Amino acid sequence: MREIDVSVIKETISRLCVNANLYLPNGMKEKIQSCAECEESGLCKGVLGDIVRNIDCAAEMGVPVCQDTGMAIVFLEIGQEVHFTGGSLTDAVNEGVADGYIGGKLRLSVVGDPLERKNTNSNTPAIIYTNITDGDKVKITVAPKGFGSENMSALKMFTPSASKKDIVDFVVDVVSHAGSNPCPPIVVGVGIGGDFEYSAMLAKKALCRDLAVRNPDPVYAEMEQQMLDNINALGIGSQGFGGTVTALYVNIEKYATHIAGLPVAVNIGCHVTRHAEEII
Image 1 (cartoon, helix red, strand yellow):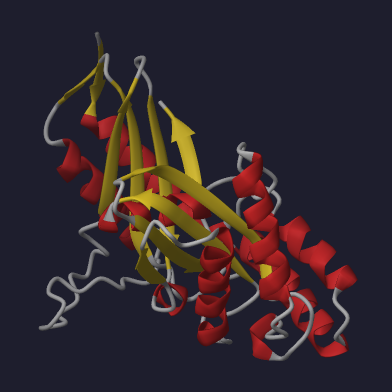
Image 2 (cartoon, rainbow, N blue to C red; image 1 turned 30 degrees about the vertical axis):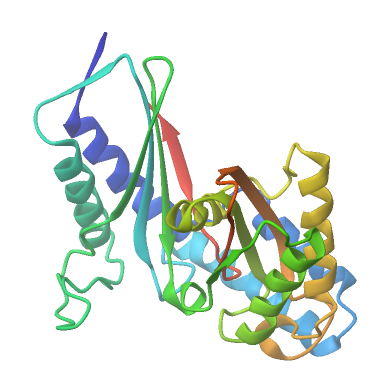
């Protein structure tokens, strides 16, 4: 049994909140640059160039890459041989988020009640997902989620008779209706299977997968490419100005489901789809 004081979790999450907001994941900047080179619209080519310059400026000046520093989504993969000491794990996560957002001078965007709308002034509580794994390590992923893109997400409970084409068409239709609202070029996370809420979590998790990694199942890898091609054929383009690049990549995560159901969730991320991770 390995003991980890929750203060370590707090400190790590505080640091990850800041890093995720200042620096995009590996490969994102390069992906946007390569899209700018192949973009057929001169206007959108310029927009993509501006986005790259914004990414560079954020890193150089130590400021957030986007003014919406998001609601903190925290994924915890906890080895079953880990024992936490020194207090509550949930409290440590939220204290880490508060420290990171307040100390890092990040925008505080969380309201304590969805109807009363009073700001908590700490960007807490966070959304926390825990998963028990083998071993004695803890993997922490912090994914700040802006709501310009979050608001454009959708979920549909298909029947088992739905075809792969039905699912691809649904995902493309969600992006089509979103238009310029999620600040394209976008990243699209798709969750297939599970139940109502689990499919949505899978879609969120899909946004955190490395953009260079395709689904290991060739059936789903092919669907990822079909969705990407069809989305980019919509002509929405960067920031909605038209063009050939609307999405940077599409990631699908899947899970087992019930014989009577086929849930499909679409979680859209903007061109600053962010996450930072660390293993303790």
